[in-house]
Length: 485
Ligand code: FAD
Ligand code: SF4
Ligand code: SF4
Image (cartoon, rainbow, N blue to C red; front, side, top):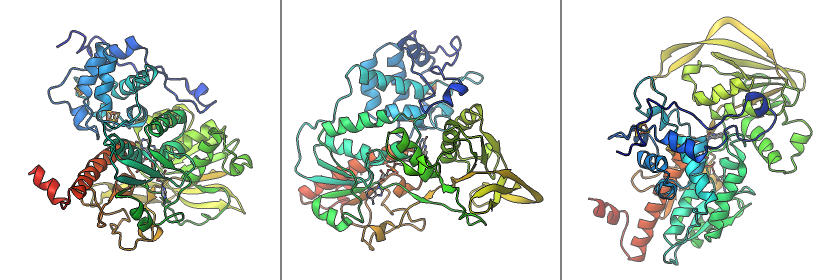
C-alpha cells in the first residue's frame, strides 16, 4: 500500500474551511470553502483502504471510494475523476448535499475514536477541480442511434437518465414544467447548500451534448402521456413528488401560514434574480418576523436556515419527536443551531391563532410512546402541557406525496401503489405500460438526490436493453433476464 494512505492516526479530520455563523446569516452563499490540493491529498490519505469498504456499500451509487481516495492522495486527479464520474453523474452535487453522516461517512470504519474520512468533501474537490482543468466533457456518443427517449422531469433522476442514454447514442428529449432544469436542485434546495450555477454548469454540458430540453412544458397541460408515447420509442417518468402533506388544525387557513415549497421556491427565485411579487410584498419573506417551522426533515432545516438569512426576528422549529429520532440530517441541525435557530423538540402544534393573519402558535408537549409496526416510537401528547409562541409566519414542512399522475397524464390505466407512487417492476423499472419506465421520487417516494441518480442510471440501462430488444424484434424483459441467468 502506498505510504500516503492510512494516515488517520497522525492526521486529524479536517473539513474545508467553514464560514462563521454570523457571516453565513448575511448571505446565501455556500457555507464551506474548497480544499486546497495538499489538504485534499492529506485528508484522502486518512483512508485505511478497507478490504470490505462499508463506505462504498452504503453509497447508493456504489462509488469506488477507496480507489479514488488513494488516487487523490497520490495527486492523480485525472484518474480520480475518471473513476468517480464512472459511477455518478453529479458527483460535485452529491459531495455537497448527500447526508454523508447517514451514508458513506457514517459507515466509514476508521478505528473507533478517530473521525471518518471526509468522503463528500473529497468527492466535491475532485469534480470541481476536474471542471477547472477542463476534464469534464459533454456526453458524446460513439455512434448515433435513431431511437428517441422522452424523459418527463429534469431533476436528478431525469438528468442522470438523460446523460446515460445520450452516451449510448439515443436522441434524448427532457420535458419539464419549470422554466429552469434541475428540479429540486434548483427550486427546493437553497443556495447555501448548493449554489445554482453548479446545476446550470451541468445542464449546459448536457445541452452541449445535444440533449434537448423543453422547459415550461407540462405533461398533462401541453401534452398527454399517450402523445409523448407517439413521439418517442420509450419514456422515463421522473416527475418527483410535490403534493405537500398538510395538517388540518384550527387556523390553518390564516394569512401567514404557508407550505414549505412555496416559501423555498420564492427565496430561490429571488436569489436567481426573478421577479417575485409575493416575496417583495413581504408575504413569503421572513425579514423582521417571528417564524415557526413545523417539521423535522431536510425541508424544515432548509426553511429555518433560509429564514435566518432573510433576517427573521426569531426562528423556531417545532418537531414532535426528539433530536435522535428526527428524519433530517444531524449535521444540518448543528448548522441551524449555529445560525441562531431554536429547536423545540417533542412538541406539536395544536392551533394557529390570530385575526386575519396568524400571530401565534399554540403547541403541546409530546412524549415517545410505544413503537408502531415500523418499530418507530409514536409521539403522544402530554395532557395540560400547552404553551404558545409568537408567530408572524408559520411554515408547514411535513413532507410530500405524489400528485395524481394517471389523471394528470390522461392515462388512467397507469398503475400506482397505494401511496400514489408509480408502480414499477423492480427488476426492469418498467411500469405496466409497454416502454414506459419510471424512477426517482415518483417511484420510490420522497427520497434523496443520490437515489434519484441511481434510479436514472438503472432506468437508462433498462431502457437501452428494451430498445435493443425492440430493434431486434425480440420480446423483453425475457431477453434481459435470459442473458442474466
Ligand atoms: P425532482 O428533483 O423533484 O424533479 C422532478 C422534476 O419533474 C421537476 O423539475 C418538476 O418540475 C418536473 N415535473 C413534475 N411534474 C411534471 C409534469 N407534469 N410535466 C413536466 N415536468 C414535470 N436530497 C438530498 O440528497 N440532499 C438534500 O440536502 C436534500 N434537500 C432537500 C430539500 C428540500 C426542500 C426538498 C423538497 C428535498 C430535498 N432533498 C434532498 C430530496 C431531493 O431533492 C429529491 O429526492 C430529489 O430531487 C428527487 O429527484 P427527482 O429527479 O426524482 O425529482
Ligand atoms: Fe457519499 Fe453521496 Fe458521494 Fe456516495 S454519492 S460517496 S453517499 S457523498
Ligand atoms: Fe476508507 Fe473509511 Fe471507506 Fe474504509 S470505510 S475504505 S477507511 S473511507
